[in-house]
Image 1 (cartoon, rainbow, N blue to C red):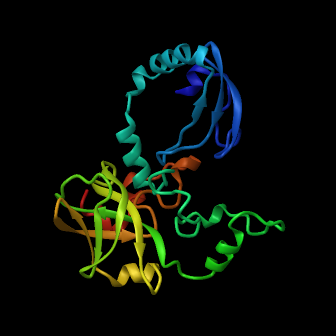
Image 2 (cartoon, rainbow, N blue to C red):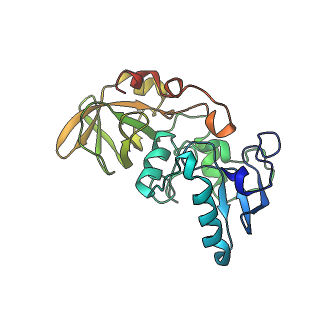
Image 3 (cartoon, rainbow, N blue to C red):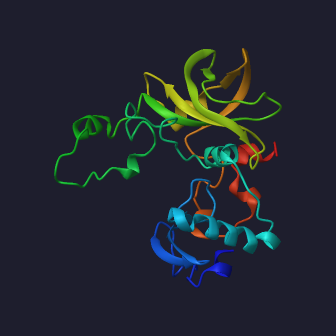
Length: 240
């Protein structure tokens, strides 16, 4: 679509994932970031306010025969939940550490100089977090989730969902939240327990995972074209 209204080269080699550059688009200019908040191949366009309408109209016109559709925030939110992307203010705050929120890869551990919070992170590093964000899927005909639903493990309350919705790609309810365990929240701890999410006062069986339920290998954002079913977690395919 973008190639129809811009002379820029959007190929994987010329414009790889996690890069940005200024491009000509329509009758204006934009700063294009090859990033995504929905787990799919795409670009974020940062456009001067006075050029926004013209570029928007050019995109809509160019996408008419490509089945381009407008989408709202609820659609964006559930797509990012399926992909396991955190939302600042909902899933991540200044009270959560990178290790607890599954974002330890963003920390510059090799940095020689000190930074705020480094000592606390070093104490957590190498240990199984006692508090950790976990992905949840609720297969079947469970009511819609909106966030703040309690999470139970083997009949014991262990946390609650920070955000949730219905994942149309995976075909069931999806959410994420922080769980607490004295022994540590590990993949084995999740595997050994039976989980339920309480929705409207009733508990529903849930699948818990440290990995996203959709495209855990991040192949789509890097331009790889894999079969959709192969991107969905095996334990959920039967529910689609």
